[in-house]
Length: 146
Image (cartoon, rainbow, N blue to C red; front, side, top):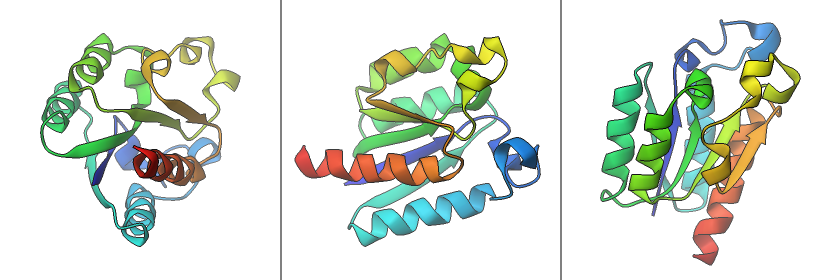
């Protein structure tokens, strides 16, 4: 079984971009922690990051047939703008959890709406980078009961 971890735009800048909001943990740190968590449970984790909406759409399309059993995504700004990513999730038919490092509901009003939350299995927001590990814990539980 395999879990796909997707990170959207600007998340490659974790650790240096607005550390007062996003902390000092880097994307490489996040990916290593999620991979280790998966390996400990006998589940492989593939990590994918892109600043381009189309690349994320194409990766979601591939997840439909490549053995991906669960997806964890931090869509970044695409959360609030991308009907294309929403439609790609619908086409992929792979369950997913949405992760946000900050509590988007305590931020600017435009960040309060997500095009993905209502089709996600679950949403983690405001737990910092720990949210990725919480989502992975949930994914592993879902895979065990599937």
